[in-house]
Image 1 (cartoon, helix red, strand yellow):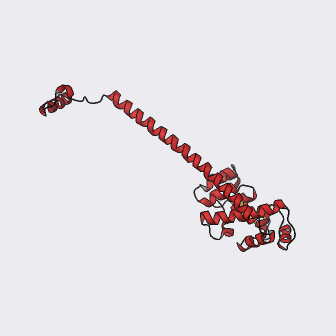
Image 2: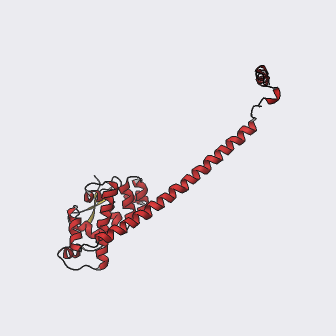
Image 3: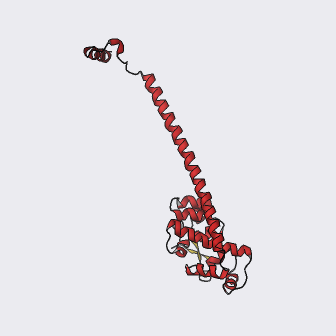
Length: 216
């Protein structure tokens, strides 16, 4: 009350009519304004989320289109030439065979010039195009070595495993560096934490086969 009186006296003293004095906002009015502000911020945040989701989908579609286009371009070369390009990147034949989904002897026959099926040719071209995309967009150096790098420490899952399991989308997401590797692992294998929390680990032996050994 005293504050209101002082406010009125100040206004009158400055030549302002008492009827023109703006009353202080009530608690209820302040609460309404705060509510409206919160609603506006929430709506804006929701719209931003929708936009971000739409942009993410658009980026993925554009990425897929570019991958298909580059695969078609790469596929114009012979299978032997494409395999030579992959070998020059540093890939081991067993890893290439896994990602393409054929045997090592089959790849070696293609390298010598024997005919591959159209489906096999497309798979080789797609793998080579995927390497092109990862190097060009995500600046990955020594890409063959990068494909052998585990997503999560002490968990023997690498981009080779993802690609061989037809999860190139996770390979690209890992290469972008913008995704949590553990979240990607959960997409690939929801039970990975339980699966790899043991005293043993799997590894690729010198013969190219997976084996089990005690950790570290």
